[in-house]
Length: 211
Ligand SMILES: O=C(O)c1ccccc1N[C@@H]1O[C@H](COP(=O)(O)O)[C@@H](O)[C@H]1O
Image 1 (tube, rainbow, N blue to C red):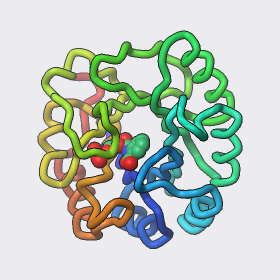
Image 2: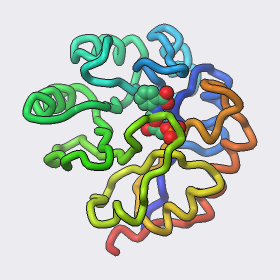
Image 3: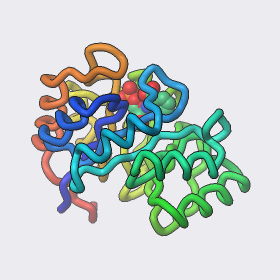
């Protein structure tokens, strides 16, 4: 039995990073892609250094967008003192080469949208199932995902305190990731919702990896 990991994404300030850590999250997401929650490298670095060693810092990038070329991603990751990369838009043979190169430097959460082909397994790679428009609060069809939800995968897409328990009863996610349901406005967290989200994940209990 394992505890479900929690990532609070779209963190833009030290205050919200400490909030996520103190509420009991395992990771924060720092978005470098085009977004209302975007942070720059120096800001992300200040956040990473402020939270201490026990909270993971996941950098969110969209491959194929400005700033998504591998050399730029690695430069940003170094400046921002990231512990892992979250990669959107990795697909096809070129995507697999990109992924293998990225995995030489950082563990990767590869984003899979409904309808995407499942990537080959690689050491250091975990999958994150998300909606077609990341950060939009759209939920996935959890029942429809059951047959392709690989063990060890993460779940995102419109998760919040009100529905994460139900999602975890349907899908044995290794981790859950949320943004828009935890905010007062884009990039600004609502402490009550962050704490309620962590409580709801804990209340769902540990998952059985052998189901
Ligand atoms: O949140 C964004 O603005 C964003 C922009 C570009 C790529 C990813 C983004 N966020 C990701 O969206 C999902 C969940 O979002 P939500 O809870 O449905 O609002 C999560 O993986 C974020 O990392």
